[in-house]
Length: 399
Image (cartoon, rainbow, N blue to C red; front, side, top):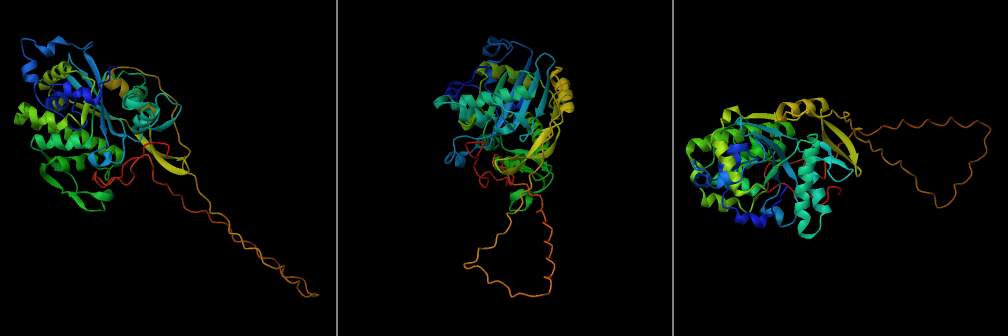
């Protein structure tokens, strides 16, 4: 797989909202439309670079980084992971979400951890300027392994600032927000009102990041719904010609290994795609707990039978069913027994007595403390929805 570093992206002269959102209902929202001049009925640049197959699988990564976080950290997690499976010949598309807390084997290691930490493992294993490339490669290979060997042909990655800027550039997205969005899992200050409204970039970002209702599974489902609705509105408004400002706003916050001509091709595919027929899927599982580094960490353990069934339904590939993982559960930490201080002098011997000593009292039974699940240092258990309030991640997933 060809990896393109961020500096090389400046050479790409086409990135359109239709090119990513229209084709694969991208991780968040990306755009514009120089493809209108490149891809036409006469062929042009878009026709010059055909894909090797009519079936494409594109990994879509949403990084949890933004400008303020980059001041204190150089590595981030892929907190949104989707795979867009495109059938170019049949003009069909499917969007599959992988829960970010999925308990998986990290590619290139013998470690099992949350899938959103794969980039961090790869980044830490790389050296110098290759650290980012190593991180992307680890994230892609971990997704491929999770899919039982189904190939990922390309990737698209965007960070939080890119999402907000793109939404603002297209004039916002009208959406019926089902509930109030607040910081601190719905207990803090109000970020987005309930009801039908025009969401600007910041409010859109609050909505797609919120986990206060339904956790990771609820968030993934809501992301898919608003992305498809956003695509529909963008096409309705004819916003595909807003090229220069939109490209400038995202080129520092987006990267991909798709070439300009390939993006143009995909954009034309997106124009012919009926958004109402995009199928959405989510890998199912259960929340389980396991100890790690002295803490009790919550993971999503994917249902193995349903994983195999979903892969066959979406990608048309039969993969082997793996043994179902069951985590050991939390470790109960018992309090240290209290010790009495040693006396400075030995106690005086009691006076002799002919009466037998009273019976010794039996010690009170030890009461175990209630089970406590500690916060996960590799995630954001109290994710406040507001990216400015959310603490930056640590560089090492093992810390």
